[in-house]
Length: 434
Image (cartoon, rainbow, N blue to C red; front, side, top):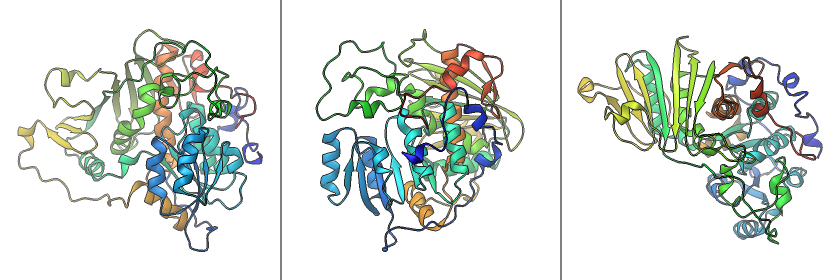
């Protein structure tokens, strides 16, 4: 497909392609208004991935014209086609992207095909909404951001839906107004566990309704096994990134936003003994950043699979299964998706929060639709969310490399650990070069 031939991602040429200043990727500049194919000023949208997480994304854009549907599972595809009988159906998203009447694309596939589908859509001139994380590897996330920066007229949004919530906005305002003073630590934890126990055994036949080779896409050649599909693919490095890849972009988003973080300086991780095939049952990742606002060092620690901050274990904060804790020199701020508390509560009795300064969102999907039509900004554009995805994925790189990484974000290189390059990028399967 012509749209995927503009650039080729290989171990030999990736760093050459991505040698650009990261500042341009961070800026959420406005996009210029793009022509809409439909005379009704409704977007013609192509849907890549139609079931599970995709259902919510489809609901979020169903006010527009759904003109094309793609899925590798014929049962899922048929169910979606019943809802949108005028939409043409595809099993191969590369065929969908060959159409000329599609304005925008929603990508809700497994992680390992996020980048190839998203880059194909961008290079063929489509606005893109892509689920998190933005890509399967750090290098892919950087390439997606780079290509989006080269197409500033296209609206982009990563699926960190909670970013649009009011609670996150109020937390960001409290941190940035200095309610808890100078923040030097942030702890982020999630109770989920996507850890696996080795590669599935046996070679059952591929069901007639499933297009297995298309599902594999750029991933290594593997025999079909029902353990992979439809939902457990996150447990295998070939396709997913475990709990950190699943939930990191949601919870670390709050830390990145409130503390104005970009790329970490160092990353180190601990977890169970490394399995070359499957993601860990638990993980603790320690990041060190320099705040872009205050230029002061900030330590951010991620915990999953039941691991939690020591402050929680000692009963110093509420016993939440999932949360983000900002630690400042004047107090602490604990938050999750819907709630937040200033701690110790006795120190903040009578505290008056600052007037809201961050406007409420019209809705995560609506932001993107409006941006496609008017050129207005999105809050999780690929400049912002690309850097967030890179940081999340670097936690897995540090775990798999088994060393603390001294990170050079400009060259996409761990200065002290050559082994990390094996996990920063990977060679796509033949026929799926991006």
